[in-house]
Length: 181
View (cartoon, rainbow, N blue to C red):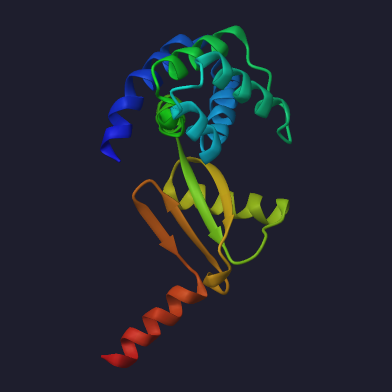
C-alpha cells in the first residue's frame, strides 16, 4: 500500500527524530499503538463522524490498559496519538510503526527477521537459530516467530527481501518439480 506508506512517512520520521533520547521506550509504545490500531472496531469508531477524537483517544488508552502487558503512554506518546487521531490517520499507525522500526534498525545496523515455523521454538533453540541466521545474513537480527503448520517441518525465514526456506513443504515442492521435469 503505497498510499499508507506515503501518509505514514512524515509521522515516522518526526517520531524518530523526536525520540532520539529514548528510542527503546518509543519503540515499545508505538508497537503497542500499532497493535491496537489494527482492530477493525476501533477503526470503525475512529471513522464514524459522530465520534469525537477525545472518545477515540480514550478508547485507545482503555485498550492499552487491558493488554497482556499494560502500556501507559508518556506525554510525548499522548501528543503523538492525538495528532494521529485528529488528522484521521489511525489506520496508518501500523505502517508508521513499521517505518519507525526501519529507522531504528538502520541506526543500529540490524534487520527484522520473520521466522515461520511448523512448531513452537523454545528459548534455547531460538537462540541457536538466531545465532545461525545472524551468521548467514551477516547482521544483527530482531527475530519474530510465527507458526505456520502447513510447512510440515523446518523453517522459512524472511529478512527484508531475502528468503531462506528450509521447510519440508519447500523441499517437497522442489522434488515435485524435479520429478515432473
